[in-house]
Structures are given as structure tokens and as C-alpha cells.
Length: 87
Image 1: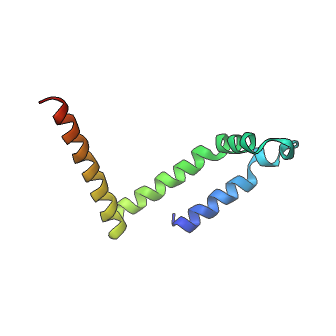
Image 2 (image 1 turned 90 degrees about the vertical axis):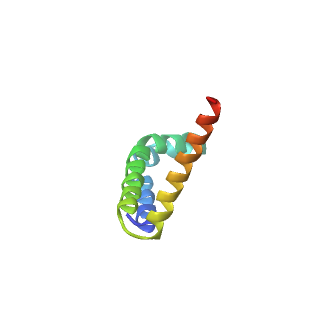
Image 3 (image 1 turned 60 degrees about the vertical axis):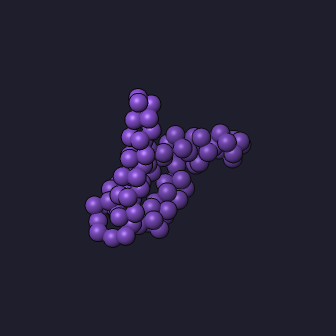
């Protein structure tokens, strides 16, 4: 999914959420309502984000290269830190 499409999917999921649309939702504190919406749509949204990330990683382009370089750099950095713990 493109970032705009993902954004629109998130907005749609929130607007359609049972937590937001159930009677009494207007009386809930913002944090309570936010937590309820997150509990309801969080996994779906995270799945969409994961799918989008994998699409980018599998595609050709500069963003794929940037992600790959970041992952490799991070892995190498962690390996160096681990090696320094066991001289």
C-alpha cells in the first residue's frame, strides 16, 4: 500500500470502529477512547503496515536500498557491540 492509501485505510478503520460508534463513546475520556480504538483496529493496521513494508523491500528502488542498508548497518553495529562484550 502506498502511504496515502495506508493513511486512508487507518482513517476509515477508526471512523468505522465499534469503539467510536457505540452509545456512550462521547462520554469517554480521550485516552479511554483512543485505547479502545487501538485495541480494536491496532492489529489490522499493523498488518497493513507490515504488508506495505514487505512490498517496499521486495520492490526495486531507492527506498528498498535505504531500508536494506539500514538493516545491515544496524545488524553489524549490534554484532560489534556483542563482540566487545566477549573479548
